[in-house]
Image (cartoon, rainbow, N blue to C red; front, side, top):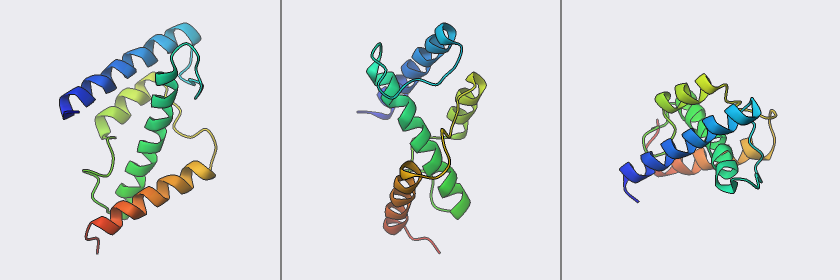
Length: 110
C-alpha cells in the first residue's frame, strides 16, 4: 500500500473511533468488537505503535520507519480521550520492547 492509502485508512479508523465514542461515551473499543472487528484491532495497534514511538524517543532511536505513530496522531487520539495504557507492564510492553530492539539492531545507534 502507498503511504497515502495508509494515511487514508488511518483517518477512516479515526472517524470510526469518533463514532464509537459518540455512541458509547468512551474510546475503550474491545479488541474483539463484533460490530467492527477492524476497529478493535486498530485501537490495539495504536497502543502498540505509541509504545514503540515513546521508547524510540526515550532511547534516541530513529523514529522514522520504526512506527507509524507521530505527534499529530497522538494529539488527535488524545483529543478524543484515547487511553494509551490499559495496564502497566505485561506482554504488550515486552512485545513493544522486542520490536524496538529489533529496529535498533537494524540501525546504527550510538
